[in-house]
Image 1 (cartoon, rainbow, N blue to C red):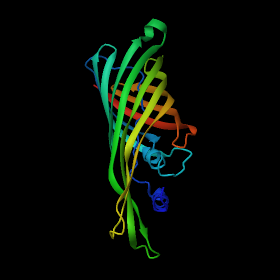
Image 2 (cartoon, helix red, strand yellow):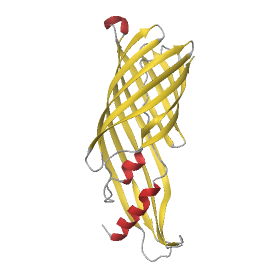
Image 3 (tube, rainbow, N blue to C red):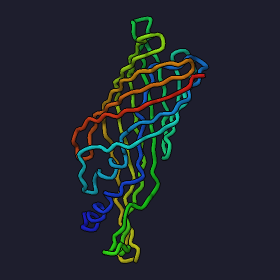
Image 4 (cartoon, helix red, strand yellow):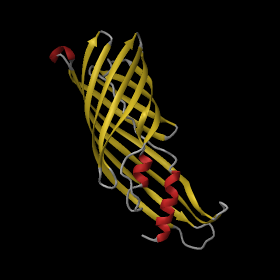
Length: 253
C-alpha cells in the first residue's frame, strides 16, 4: 500500500459521515390475517460505515463498532393464520428491510408461543467526499478521498413469547446474522498530478444475536421497548459483543 493511501485513509477517519445502519427491532408474534400494523421505531444500531471504512485493504485499525441513531418506518400485514410479511424503511438514509414472521407453536399449546423469522436488510451509500489534502491555511492542495458502499444484513430470528397479562407480552429471541458489504474507496487528484487510485472492497462477517422485549397493548396501539445484543467479528478479526436499545410505537388496524 502506498504512503499516499495511508495518509488519505488517516485523513478520512475523523470524517466518517453518511452513517448507515440496519434494524434490530423484532415483534413477539405474527399478525392475524387481514390485520395491518404501521409503526415508528427509534433506537441505536450498528454503524456499517465504520465496518466498511476500517476493513482491508486500507490498513486502518478498529477494535469496536460505533453506534448510530436509527429511525425507521415499519409496515406489516397478516397474510394467513400464523404468517405475516413486512417492510421497514430507514429514515434519513438509503436502506430498508423485507421480513417475514411465522408462528410454529401457539401459546395455548405449550404455554409459550414460538415463531421463526427471516429478513434481508439492504443499504447503500452513494459516493461522497470524506476529505482532501490541505495546506496550513486549509486550502485544498491536491487529492480528495471519497467512498461509496452497499450491502445487506441477512438475519434469522427464533422468537419465544408469553403473555404476562392480557395486554402485556414478554418475548426473547436468538438470531443468526450475516453481513455482506462491497464498495470502493477512491483518491482523485484535483490538479492532475497523478492518476485516480481506487481500492475495491468486498467482505462478509458472521454474527449471532439476541433480543428481549415487552409489548404492551393500549386498544389499537402497541408500545414495544426492547434491547438487542449481537456478537460480531470485526474487520480486524476481533470478536465483540454490543447492546442496542430501541422503542417501537405502532398501530394495528
